[in-house]
Length: 524
Image (tube, rainbow, N blue to C red):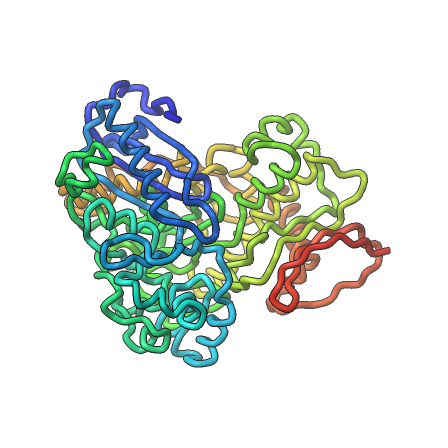
């Protein structure tokens, strides 16, 4: 469907920048003006969705959405793309050689453990994190055991965003942030690691060239122009993963800034000009989209996605729909002992535990839908607080966070974050930070601005500030500490056992012998 323009000064769209964002909520394609204002938005379901999926279906969905926009008369000056993290294998013809693997596909957890054992501290030192089941390194090692024939058919090891760029331009390339998530990349030296690639069975020639996220990837090919309605040769930026691109969209172009891009997951990033010698506390180190910057932090497990799951379980289309229905009761709905962990598909930042599952604790007959939504919202904000604590553990000074995404729209949600995180919050004024960042990258790649800093000055969204309320911050701090205790997360990060006195019902997912299970129990 096509959304109404958000820029009241620009009704028909004479020309502009095309932003493409593929994420947990589907495909979004937008025309964005030179000031960064969203002029026209098309959204649709991703036909390639799923933990293992056909990326060609996603490409067809993107091409169709672009065609809908260009058919309306929009003239596209440049294209920028972003997408959630996924591993895509492409053959010599540029088509998929296997099913793609979305970030939440955790089948390679054993191979991640093997890499930790094999490479030890070297793995974390070079790649900025311990072994991860969602990394291309672990997944290719897994495929080498389970589907060895696939690797022989593979010419390029890409992300989903890279695959879409390949379809548009015919050029295989990636950006430093995406490369960092593969665990095949030396994040400090900003180059592929031949040693780690060799240990994972990845031929170096399958790894694409790495360019700045605001560099030019290439021009739209004649074949892609026929599919999309774009003019052949239209510049296409290299782009980046959705969280990093969202950070770019809210102006994270200098060291010292901290950004939280809220969506299906949150992506919490602290921008630094010097890569940390040792990253600790479960944070990860990435090379940033811009050549002279890095980020410490990373994506969380499900946050907004956990809220959407709960809302759907309660009979609503989404968390936004549930809030619209329950809004009158939310403020008065004190969750009390009810606490929720939203990590339904595992935790990422901090700790990177692919086998962790969500949990509901302290539920009683007194609790209704509004209490559940309030507790889940708190739980998702607490998850990000864990990440902020991890950032501080690396020595990063976090006193102000730029927040973008759905929660940035709601003053109540923004104030909750300011109270829980105990920082000043600057909220961007619209939801689509990743689209704005993709357009910003496109503008720089097309030569409309000298560099990303100049583009951010012209295009980054304005912010509204929220400071912690002393009484509210004190109350949420008590609940946060209690939540940590209930969810077996003491200060040292090691599991503990709590006394069972006065415990109420709980619902939990757990992991046993390679299988995911769930259950309900009551402690008396």
